[in-house]
Length: 431
Ligand code: ACO
Image 1 (cartoon, rainbow, N blue to C red):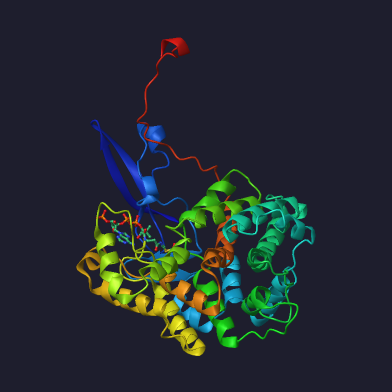
Image 2: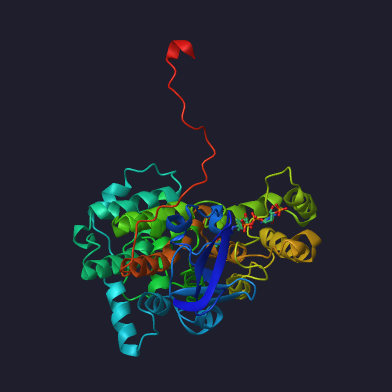
């Protein structure tokens, strides 16, 4: 963040206040209002943060108009094509692409932290088997702070590092365990000879009674889903992690807060909601009915998997995900399944519909990821846990970046109070 010679002038009741303008390396300039309250006695008002930068960051950049997503400067389509998830994890965490030696060391480190404390198995068993896997994830990840006491001190750089690796390494194990628990199958331990994505598929789909061979195309598709969800700058769940962490909370508690936020259908829960919507529509002839509902101001229904707060032309992740979906569906020979037919037709009709064009509503990453995950064999309830697993590296990278900032302050938004002013308490008999 660099000071510029530019400033903005705010005129308020005849008085002028000069506000510094900060220049980013990319994106719009930012008016610095940090001293505004002290100088002018007013707050700014921006619910939903549509025009407010909550922090400075060097990790991820999005240009919503261009449909551009960069991690440490590298475009997501290049990373999805040429890189793989653990390399992207390294990039997000440490700021540069690893050398061959660095990558090998990092992969080995992550692989050697994939098992979870054996006692956590019993902790799982306290949940009802019909719990939503996200409910279990929030609980289990939060509970990691009760198992890994040697990586809770946020002021110790080494402990922060260990916590980061633990979270990235153990999240697939935890997500797979939530799945196995929900279907009543035994937990499957990680295998260190498999790569990150293949190991996750192994832990989800193998059973002790039978040999399970991971299909490399499915492992590649899984890896892509992880890569495309790895980070997305200051979205709701990442901002939640940063806000939780600003109070000095431990890393596992902060990531559990991020998981809780991600669960909502307007954010990470959209992939589950989208596939459920496609199934509810059921057949192509019912699409107009649902489009009409999406446009009706009096109906809260929205087309799930469409629209994005930042991307207003297209979601660059959706483009890659669509290619992946075609590849996986062809491999599995399910191109003609009815849900997919509805998805393809809905996409086509919505993209030509004036309402969606005018409001710049395009299919987002979740529109296609659900289709792939369904084809691989995951139930819809596992879609958001898989998103949480993939996003963990983004949360962790942003958490580490925030803690390294010497100017870190507790996050404490202001409000526009519209409630009652002071009034005297009324005794119960007089109300
Ligand atoms: N279907 C129908 N109409 C929509 C949709 C939709 N999916 N999304 C937005 N609109 C309409 C709104 O009704 C609103 O119309 P209006 O201007 O007439 O009031 C207008 O488009 C703008 O919508 P906002 O809600 O103001 O846009 P915002 O940027 O706040 O919301 C969001 C973005 C939450 C993603 C929204 O588009 C949505 O709810 N989409 C469906 C859920 C979804 O797919 N979420 C996944 C996001 S991607 C991710 O988390 C990985």
